[in-house]
Length: 356
Image 1 (cartoon, rainbow, N blue to C red):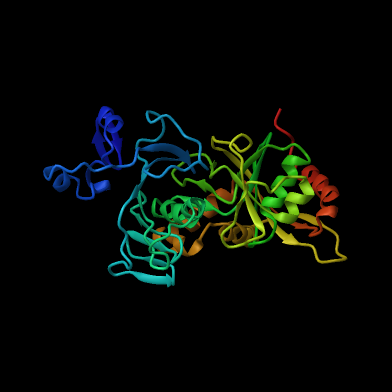
Image 2: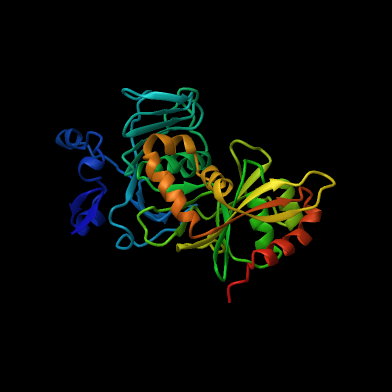
């Protein structure tokens, strides 16, 4: 027997049937169709693991690394294809594309898809959109939303803490970089990897689980988001790369071989700020309320955290983790040609020794 989404299910049933069992999904009218003698095709299941979460999905997600169905956390999540409502019952509209109620979150794009996230256990994907009733959006665009805001919402519903960071692996643990959008988190980690040889850990999204006894960071989808200028500076080709939906000059590099798959202890958090022209770069340790604010600002989609996570528990967890890690501010040069000497200073100051 295997437990999935809170139900005990024989593993043979999971492996031999395309039906999603029990209350975690719906059969989309399968029984009535079978009674009328009509066959109902259901997509095959695909199994993945990301953000410390086992996922089985009716949508193939080539950006993720596939796993054996028998492995992973039995209390996982699933992605199913089905109908999603235009609005939520008793829903609150946070933005024109985001609605929530006590146990659901609805993310919609008029040109891409609609996604219903429920109880931290289930995502329903509906590709029928009003703006393009006869034309499906590109598969890559559908998955970009899925692996960003939609996955983040599901993690918040589980009361885990997704962080908007990029990170590298060092001998003492993970060094994670955070900062405002456009601060250069991905560019910095790419430079540390490609120029100084530090292993990549995660980009854009990683997860802390408050129930863990140690402060392990779980890596997100194995991709690296880089601006065109950063790709050029690192000598990386844009050929075949997926463009970012929100930013035409940003690209997604799949990094299944380079990025890590297992959790590692979080050692340091570094907030990135921009060195103004004429000012030298600087690295300094920060503590107290300044460090606490840096940590809280690193939370991925913080508005969703406020909705689904008890804020007293969030603040308590933030205080505890700041007692176990070091927090720094790094004022970095914006010109990529000036970044290399600054990186060497950063590595030395933070004692970011390469993993042996």
